[in-house]
Length: 101
Image 1 (tube, helix red, strand yellow):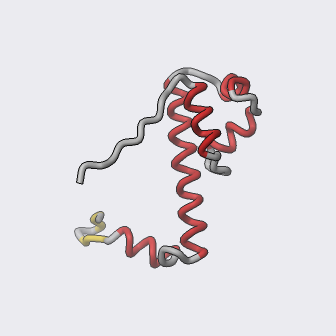
Image 2 (cartoon, one colour):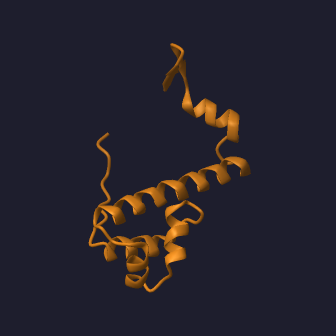
Image 3 (cartoon, rainbow, N blue to C red):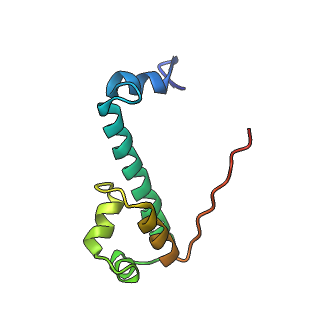
C-alpha cells in the first residue's frame, strides 16, 4: 500500500488495472520485464561494489561486454546458471533463505 494525496492505494490492484490479472499474457510480460530489470540492478550494483568493469566480468564468465550490458540494463534476463556464474565471478555467494512465517 502507498499513499498519494492522503489516499491509500493498493499496489496489486493498480498493477492489475494497468497490466492485467496474474496469469494473463500482459501481466506475464510485465512480470518478466520487471524481473529482468530487478536482476540487472542487482548485478550492476554487485559489480560496481567489487569494482569490476563490464569487460572484466565478461572475460571472467567467457562472455561479451555487450551481453553484460544488456543484462544490467534489463534488456535480457540471464538464466539461473549465468546468474550464478556472474555472482561467483564477482566473488559473491547466493544464499536462499526461507522467510519466517
